[in-house]
Length: 310
Ligand code: BMA
Image (cartoon, rainbow, N blue to C red; front, side, top):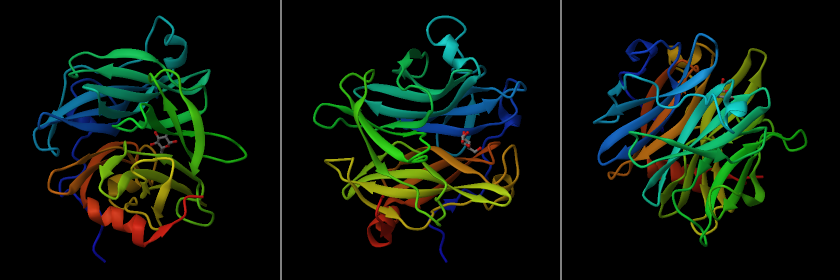
């Protein structure tokens, strides 16, 4: 069978050996195209087991060079300090209104929350505020507003409706509301244990394409795979279809074995003018990998081989 995601021949394309400061991993990176150059924010574990975010740049989306110093590290003073003490993880980037919005997980003894930072050019970064309470991860902001409101997908945790995808809206990026659960894990399916937003949604003529991760629990631990869902263009709370089969699963040795085995986890994908999309994923929470897919194949999977979202 032809693979829907074509892996880059030189994966893993970024590893700790290429980072000019001491880190143990390079994974779960957000990527955006800024004036024909690619900017990547990647997560790295330090030897404390806590994470920071680094920046790498590329001309072709495949060969990246890391900046000499980390880009975003836990705050030591001020209102964020108490919530970033255990590290910053899994960034996502959305370009909207001339700014790049960065959402990331902030870990502390008070739980995991999502924080928002902003930059215009990636030469400096301004941390804005925390935008969730505890027990949230995987916030992706849509690159357009809906009826004047920002929209985001996120993944709160609840024992009653475990690890489902929700949407909420905000007039100012700080205060979020009108929350609705829009997509649930599917029982006895590759994503039955938990799902979470991956890359910020990509606009297509048929709808917003969302690449998400789904987890299946086995006797040998969890397996993280990637899937796709298509959201209505005008009303992103409405899901047209969820691709019934995964688009990527751990297969290469560096996806099967590493810091956490059997993981492919995405925080970013870059649509290209030729109708392809570069999907970036962390392999086994250790290295960065990339592959390409045709956007129309991913959309078709949701439309023609789809399942309801809940
Ligand atoms: C999730 C997050 C991700 C990680 C994944 C696999 O819960 O912690 O950052 O990639 O587990 O370990």
